[in-house]
Length: 195
Length: 195
DNA sequence: ACCTGAACACCGTTCAAGT
DNA sequence: ACCTGAACACCGTTCAAGT
Image 1 (cartoon, chains in turn brown, blue, cyan, green):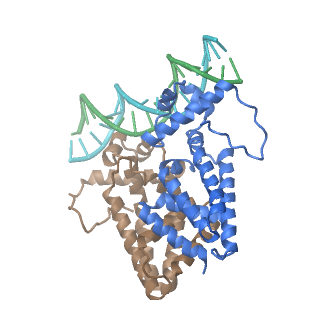
Image 2 (cartoon, rainbow over the protein chains, first blue to last red):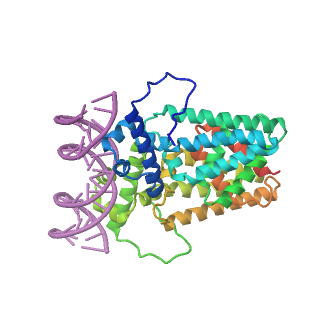
Image 3 (cartoon, rainbow over the protein chains, first blue to last red):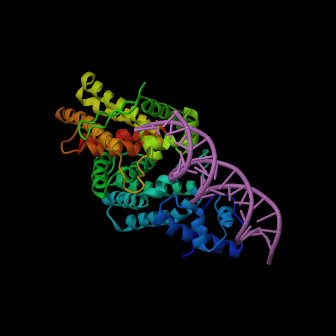
């Protein structure tokens, strides 16, 4: 399960990394996934390097920030969510697909709540390219689902897909339990359906 | 401006602290407010103690956790917001007061976004008494505003005040800028008004 | 080019001694 | 009771030396 670098359409092509460097990167991400899951988003980085069987300085070479490592761990989740959106577009009725997707989005983010909270706090306004790519990808997926819902009359026109994502991640982060998240989603749905 | 300990109705009465202890506590909270504002929620605790002119170990004696210090800093905000809710109940029409309050709530929390994010992550399921008090106070304020809005037909029945708070804090934390927060609030308002 | 482990610096936490 | 500063431990970051 090689951690695919997102094949961003834009941006300058980066040279392919040396084979061992790529392997180390993958090992580090895999170890980070484990350690973050076990000990939370502020787990010691040395522990991750140790678990990966790799020098700690090498970790830092690949991921200058803890944030970048968190983002790399999150990459799979994002890819999955976007793919899931495509499936829903194909399989589910236009009036439902948007809401099913948002509900799964909330569940996903809530289950990685610690990571989700740790990522946004960019220290000096620095934004990772990968982070922007995700926003873009998510917005595209949400936009397609929203457009179809609007065409079917299940969502009022003039809504912004990015706003829906904000609401969904807000619920994921702030809700105390799945039951509350569901109630909030229902409330949001009523708002989306329109005034 | 002495940091008032919330006069919780419930719970065992705590002995009044010695005068110098109370004074130190206040100095620490004031210094913490400054330092957190300048350097973010993960500023060095020693810096705060130094700024307050107090030994670092004394800081730790008063606030075993960084979280507890953050919570103490936040206390004023909460008190203000609840008081503001009372004012709105008295001065504004029933159809508007709830939404004005939620909008101010979002603005408040967003302006202390770092602190708001840093507080909830309770490490080992520990919840501070003060933290619970707040939730209670906020829920009460939101509940009164909601009940009045419902009586005026501006909010659908069966809504839960706690859910509204979750949505509002979610927006505050997740929105990228005030404009987006406002759009999300409008969306939420449509949902509150009912299906 | 990339990797390594050890050295350094920083900061949270504790402790023995003071009032 | 409460305070203090210094000692300790931990962890992120850097660096000189290796391949």
